[in-house]
Image (cartoon, rainbow, N blue to C red; front, top):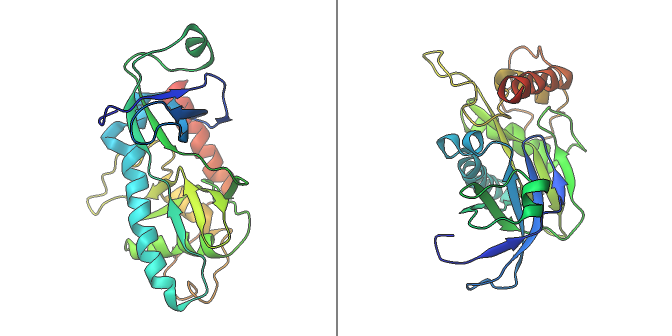
Length: 238
C-alpha cells in the first residue's frame, strides 16, 4: 500500500459476487496493525479499475450520501455511510492463494473495514428491494440529485442502531446529450436505462420522494435488468 502498510488475507472465500471474491484479512503493519479488514479480489482487474471505477463509484456514492444525510435532517430518515475501499497491490501469493483465488502478483485488490453485524442486500442491482424505506428513497433521490443522469444502486451492508453501513455500491447511468456512452461507463454493473427503469418498476415512493422526477415510461423490470447483466457477463468473460 502507498503508506507502506501490509495486509495479509486468507485464500478462503468469505463472500462471492459476479465479479469478485471477498476474503478476511488484517493489517500486519502500520498504524492499523491487527485491524480486521475484507480484501476483494477481482475476476478482471482491468475492468474493475477501468477509469478508476471501483474506487470512483464509492466516492460518488459517499458524496451523494453525505448530501442526502444533510437533506434528511428535517425528516425521519436513518443516515447512511459507505465504506471507502483502498486500492492495494498484491506483492506475495502462496500456492493455495493461486488455487483458490484469481489473485496474481501485481494485481490490484481493494481493502475495506470489515462489517461484523448482519449483512443484508437492501437494494439489488436489478431493482429488487428487501423493503421500502430510507434506502429505496435514497436511490430515487440520487436520480433527482444528479439531474436524472445516474442512480446509486446495489445497496448492501449492515443496519446499525443509528445508521446504515454500506459497501460495494453500483451505478446505472444514462447517455450524454451527444447520445454517446461507454456501455461500461460505471463498470460492468452499469445497466443504463434498463437498470434505472427496473428499479422504478418496484419502487414505492414515500412522502420524501413522491414529488421527485421519475422516467416517463417504465418499460423494464428486474428480470430485464438481470438479462442485461447476463449479457454483459457473457460478452466480457464468455
